[in-house]
Image (cartoon, rainbow, N blue to C red):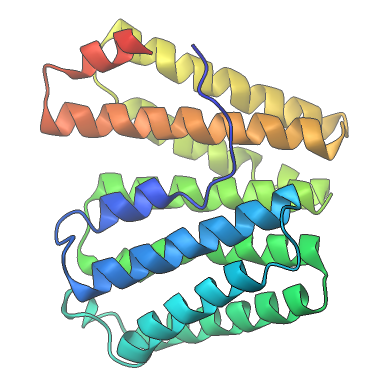
Length: 245
């Protein structure tokens, strides 16, 4: 059964990356910000309830809460991240652009910038000493969000440039999956959708149809991510999860 497609800033990934210390102030504030960014992005994409004053206000307020604590002082886990301030400044600039575009009622360009910002959030965890697998998850999320951003902007040439990068990420996922036939089947489904996405991009098919397939691919990748984690946490139960799909 195929997963149900839908827009995401990958809240699940942020939840995963903060799972080691979910009650910390950093974890709570970045999760709150990501959730509000997801809501704004979904509203912009679906053209629901313009002019998005509440959604934008929630993003601005949660960013203010996050940045007031961590703009120049990273959390303890990232204290050795020499690029922390640069990352925070880049995010702040993007949020300023998003706010300006929403206020000017340029909603699709604003959505594009929401996707761009979403694709960079994993960078805040680079200094946390996270595992190779979680770094792989961050890379996959960023590449797929960039792919969606380029397609929605009708920039198919830039989208094509991501083909080999995403294929490489999928191969990394394959190598990390449990050595079971059912896991290979799940991977084959993701690979099939990947091929459909880039075939449609090559054929210059309409943005809406390509975007739907990208969302489907995102959810298949999340499914693979879950299988890899289940193998790590509960080695004997990953097969059960697959059989329920």
